[in-house]
Image (cartoon, rainbow, N blue to C red; front, side, top):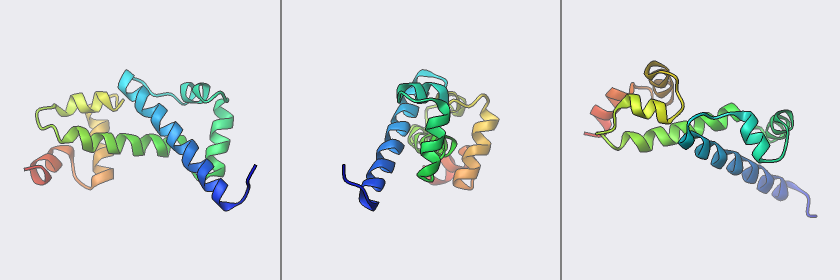
Length: 118
């Protein structure tokens, strides 16, 4: 097996991409859980966290990145209600989605739609 910086980068991208893909699938179905993702990768929650940490990643960070990217995609459809977007992204309430969106983009979802997508 090849070792060195290149193989470590490939492993990191690979694990990050796999976790990201599994999170996207779970979001589409409803809830997202680290236990389910770890199980799908045939490892314990602890092992997943440990491997991600070695690569400078966290499950929470990957989840947030996936949610942010999907939020921006969903926001393109002006007919889609914000509460529906919040639900599709796994937020318990619209207010939680709004706070996260403001943290990501520096503006509320409604302001983003009216200013950037007009």
